[in-house]
Image (cartoon, rainbow, N blue to C red):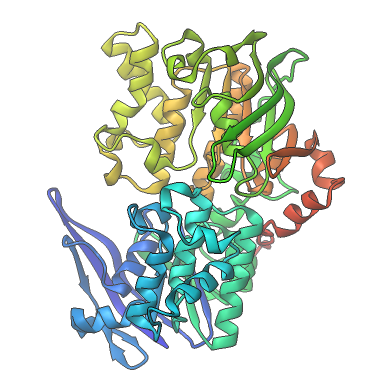
Length: 543
């Protein structure tokens, strides 16, 4: 199906040539799913872009051979590649919002692909586009056909990108982090769909991911990349059960699982005793009968419905549920980015719901309530360097001088594992994981009393995720900080959170102590979330 021999990718930069991929070789069989795993910057995505010939002008591809179904891609013309892309080889990109045209309806974007690469006509293209939306479990596809990308959640946009990639039934599907932004049930549905298509149509797939649970569940073989090199390759079971390379062992050991602690995710050389946090009886946040309505074409749409819960001082509360259940809306209201329609929010016994969101940014209480956003790219000003992004809230909400601000920026950058040489880079010069770290550093710079984290580890590789989770544990103990941790990763939630709230269609259907919810869920919906959660690979056996 695909044979890659001695692939090299070099980027020409102002500071010289950078070797992103270094002399790698691999084969992909017909009907096989090949997983490529590794940390941010390892060369995973660059490899896939090189195969598709979609690198920017600074990227130089050199290879002895890249053969797809007898076609030498390294020598193919751009016209030939345009014909191959979409029809023969299709790709799901990591960031769905940058993959979609913001001023074009999603149905028309699917039709564009169908008309170019399949037998779709003006009469049946719409029906085929709606069928593609149904295949990726988009609710009400007939109406969503007319939606613009900005009207959809991040998870919904990712489903649309999957629909576009699969619409023409390609023979080879390259999926670059295809489940980013998806809740666990949709994630499972999309991965099951991809695997079913591969089996039924004798397709092949290259699956790029940092989620080792997904890789172990869906991939036949695994390639492990580090610093542009392939450090290990083999059958999935053998790679994860009997890893030979120290780097592979580190990745497997850093994967959250129920039988491990937060500290055990770290490498032995950096482990330290976990500081015990205290959960006080005093409530730092109390939500009473909170509701949010949005105007709709056919009447008001209720995003959240009469929800109530409490967060104690020093407590970490997990908020879980599928995309569209109201998690992000709840987070935005509590951080005072948007106003509630009904209900009260008591922060430290003060009713902050009485303050209009448009005026809250300069309120002294703002420094006590900070948020880490789901999409690190969209949350950063593209004109601000990392240093400027981190220092911005410090300048606006404190009286620190420039030297003090710079010291603080360096301090929090070190805390989140952000190399200091990246501080003067713009967002487009940073990887997804690096941008996520900038967002977290910005949020903790003011030492808030409560930190609202909206999927903070979704784009991080497992080793950086382990560092961030341990950082959150240490900060909570050191600063007596409280967290609202919004996530679809139940493997992470059960390790970090004291208390779990389960939401469905805007209402809280279940809440309780973390161990209780995980071990003995009362609701079938909660049980379905747990069943859909990827099972991490087994811990490596001692050699």
